[in-house]
Image 1 (cartoon, one colour):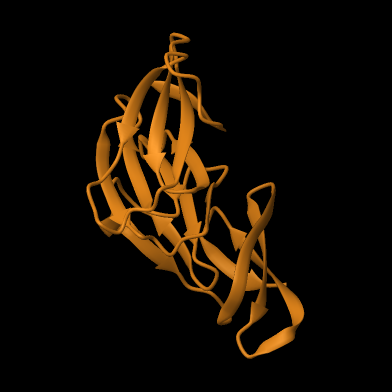
Image 2: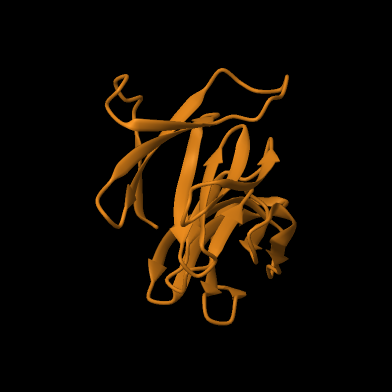
Length: 172
């Protein structure tokens, strides 16, 4: 099982065992991202993903690894690193894992949660306002602080707080 991952620059040829995650599409960019995976036994291998890197997390709760690039959202099996599902040209710009192991995505105006191992399992979390420029800031215990501007009122920054236990959001 994979226990850790990190974003790396393009490795030297032969430096690691490599696995290429590429979806055949005429919409693919020329960008690539590399993720170094470490298994529990210490063995490492490198995944090469189509698109510019935006984020990567693993969740033991869902038994998945999520890699977000400009071209795709890749969902991999945590045990085998096999591709389970993907979404082409995702609008998501950020990804995070909560302290409880939930995976959150944002597209600057919506907050989403991955409920299972498929892209069909991505659901919206209701927000108290219509945000623009939503951004994950930091965790404070079991709360995620997010900054944004309210749609139509770009004069002031607003802080939203997600309670990771109840998955409810309130305006600070």
